[in-house]
Length: 311
Image 1 (cartoon, rainbow, N blue to C red):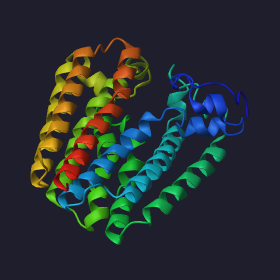
Image 2: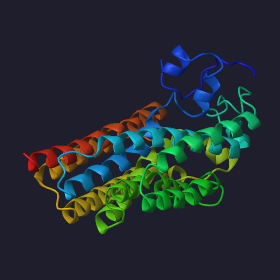
Image 3: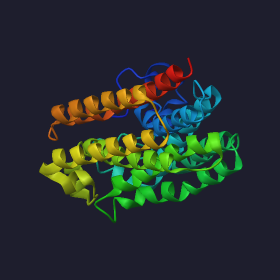
């Protein structure tokens, strides 16, 4: 392997992988995107939202900390496995795109066989997490793998690959409720749709970083599809997400503090839209990363609402 200490172009500055990880682990940490934690945050949030929504519906003062821990570990492991799989599929594309050519496989830091082994190991961690839940949740989790497997190929066949990412990354909105109740209801389904619209919105912003290179190599995306109408499209997607969350809260019998959290989410998403400049890659990346705060705002509202109703 070469250049074990070479940073990936779009990594978070001063991340722990580059600063503290041993040399042999660095390329694997980069492959799993441990140097870019926003991905696992975005995968985790629908799980946490759903768990908190279910806890409130069940009359519990706080979502089960064990479930939150499991979903966090599972999000880190499966996001890493998914990124490794994605990089294996996209190595020829990544080598031709400025932002991605420094990734471990195209840059030669990790061989394809090493990446495959690492993907399996991460998947086993995800499986170990999944089997801690009830049978319904296990089956539901396994069902998501078909979408995960299809996602890397979508940018070759549709202008809407972000919609497939939305189907995959929002799956946790179903999992949290299923973990608590062993079944699904309309509230988590609507939360799933909320995550779906939210994901398309924020990933469209993210995709604007690569639009020139994507157009050159023939990769398709909503960033290219929406082009100068991105603000209108993302505004509509975010509005649809907020509407679906509101319906989910109503169906789950949530109280006023949960709606206050949703109002905070609306303000934050509005701030994103006001700041959006699709021709400023650095700003697009910063706005994309700010969606971690979106997650905290909604989760905080759900938790405070459950606590208040159990005082």
